[in-house]
Length: 374
Image 1: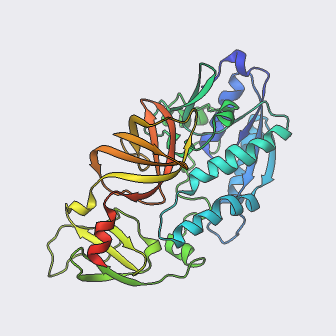
Image 2: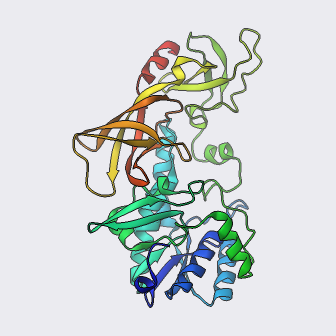
Image 3: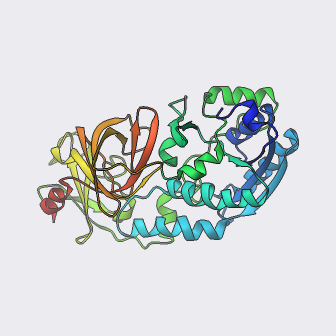
C-alpha cells in the first residue's frame, strides 16, 4: 500500500467505492492502516435500459459498507460525465477515430470532480481500487506501475496531474488480484466472487454497434484492398479500428489466400475501409504523431529516450519521443508497431514510472494506405 501506518492513521480517506471487489478490499486495507474511511459511490450514467449496472452496483456498495461499518455517500455525476467524457467520446467516433473514455473519466471525473467533492466531505485524501502506485521523490509525486503487472492500470491514469496523485492512495498497488479475492473471502464479503467489470460503464454488456448507432447514424461503404479491389462492404467506419482482424466478414474469398485480413486505414473522405492481408507491410509503422500531450511531472525538453505503450496490456516498446510546440509530439519506435489507432493513447514509461502520454493522431506512413485505396 502507498502510505505507512503513521501517514494514514486518523486521516479521513474518501474511498471511491464502485460496488466491486477491488474497491471493497481497498476499504479493508485502509481500515487496517488506521484510516478513517468513508465511501463515496458515483453514479455516472442514468439510462435505465437493462444494460447499465448502476442500480445493482449501488446496492452492492451499500452492503459492503454495512459489513465494514463504513459511512456511504452517494453522488450523481451523470451531467458532468456526459459533458466532460461522453461528448468527446462521440466527437471522436464521428471523425473516424477510436477513443478511450476511461482516460478522460479518470482525469475529469475520478481525479477531478470526485476529488473536489471529497474535499467538501472533509477528506484528507482520496483512495481508489486502481492497480497502481505512487512515490514521493525529491518533493514530486510519481506514478508507478502496480506490482501485479497483469493488472497494472497506470496506462489509464497517465493524464492525472501530480497534485491529484499527491492526494490519492492506491491500496491495491502492491498486492496481486488473487490476494484481493482471498481478502474479500476471508472477510465474508458477498462480492468476493463478483465478476470484474469490463468495457465502458455506459455501454455495459450491450452490443457496442447497437449502442453507437443510437447516437451516430452508420454510413455503410466499400472495403478495399491496397490495390483498389473492392473486397466487401463495411457497416460504418466508426465500427472499426486500425489493426482489427475480427468481424470484417471478408474471409474465404476465391481471389485471395487463407491469410487473415486486417484494417490498415480509414479513408474518411471516400468512406472506404482499407484492409490488407497477412503480413502486409502496410500493417507496420515505425512511429506516430500525437497531440494533447500531458506530463505528470516536468515537461521534457527536446527529445526523450523511453518506452511506450500504444494500447493497454501491450509490452513496453523502446522509443524516442520528440517534442513539438502546442503539446504535439512524434514517436520513433525501435521496432515497427502494428495497430497504431488514432484516438487511442500513447503512454510513456521509464522503467516502472509512468511519465505521461498523448492522443495518437496518425501512424507514420498511414497516408500511403489511404492513397492506394482512394
